[in-house]
Image 1: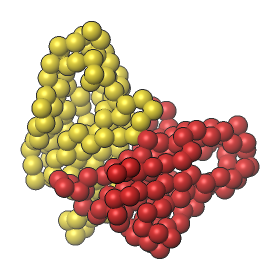
Image 2 (image 1 turned 120 degrees about the vertical axis):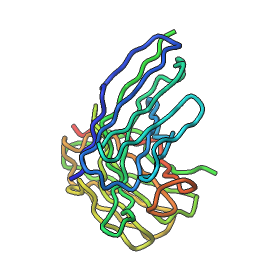
Image 3 (image 1 turned 90 degrees about the vertical axis):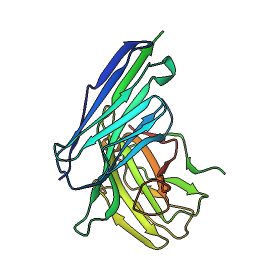
Image 4 (image 1 turned 180 degrees about the vertical axis):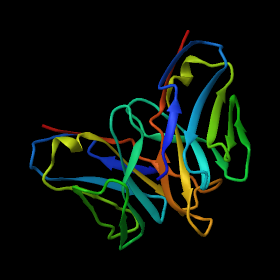
Length: 117
Length: 116
């Protein structure tokens, strides 16, 4: 059974710092991995998606890497801002025996990020 | 374009009561999902549907039922509510199961349910 773990559970940093959020998964047979952002009282918004054949994806100040063989992904946020404060969730899409997916995401428990001015 | 719409936003139920959480999407997506999120935890899949008339169980289906009579709607039914069902419920939809570039999963804003 796929399990996803995120470290740390919470992180508080001053504005301007570069930071790294970690995600690990137990089964390397994944179709892809996504990082989501969740604001209080809101749904989830997809930030970055890395296909299983890719190593990294970048969007603005965000960079996500994937090491499928070791079961790890990192989300790097450069020059953090107070507006980055949110919960960040990692989720893997499990691959089936045919190499495609069932469309079912397995989530980590999230990292609560606070960026203070 | 409203995306994924969930109602109600908040609800308090008494033990043993029943209710239905409504979910509608206007993107003509085939796949729809119900997740629950407990405090400090990630989301867990309750049920999903691959199209009208077709539903299947996820990781935590006990105590819930779903139906998919139309492409747009995917209601989640709670029968005989229990305190363990206190959670935040998220509905989501996607065009296909192969989530990826150009095929994003969209989430509703959640329904907060408390069972007392």
